[in-house]
Image 1 (cartoon, rainbow, N blue to C red):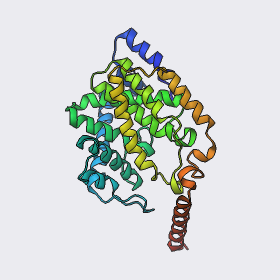
Image 2 (cartoon, rainbow, N blue to C red):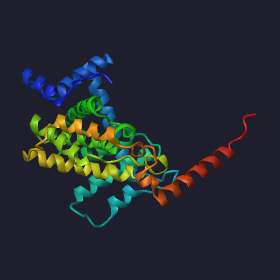
Image 3 (cartoon, one colour):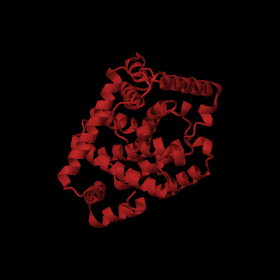
Image 4 (cartoon, helix red, strand yellow):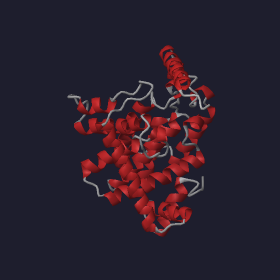
Length: 302
């Protein structure tokens, strides 16, 4: 992946010296990488955000049952449940993050932000934020650019892939992107934006990637919802000027170190964690048998 900045410190220094917002270097990077004019970049971001919103809507209105049977309209159940644990807004946040990720698990169209396995976090967080605070689309687009900048640095210094760094690298990266975007949209300073990233990483540190039957369904879907909640709580803490104590770049390096030290069975191999439980192994065996039966039913090409 091409490099925007090697660190959050260098990103902030660039913006401080040129007196430009955080999203501007990312916008220029996109223009240079894609060989397009600025208008085209904004159009592309708008299209991506529309796909995010469509995924939320589809997950809450259409049939969401995966081939494995592990996903069964969970988002609708959460959205329609009469009891709100914290608030109706929190209930919507959780349901929307579930919805967009269920669309991915059911082979629908999503935005990999930064990966398909974490595709419910930004939609859940930003759609809900925009509704609550009546934020204009342009501000959301700028927040998405800042999120992209966050992901580029995480990829450079650690990882954004579950197969490399565990789920902390995948849903953790998406949560960090979302928390940065939330703080930006609510008028936070550059320091507060990066503090939100640091706090999010601290909350997600060490999370393993253990998909049952090797499918990006369980526990991936519910982790998207919990990561969206962590993004919001981290943003709230950062906006209140609570220090993460450990600087953001050091938090990222810690995430990279933890990811490197994880055993292979905890990195998307479906050999450890929930995938290795008796129920997880039984589901894996059942899904594998179904796959073999489907292959046997296919007509002979001769």
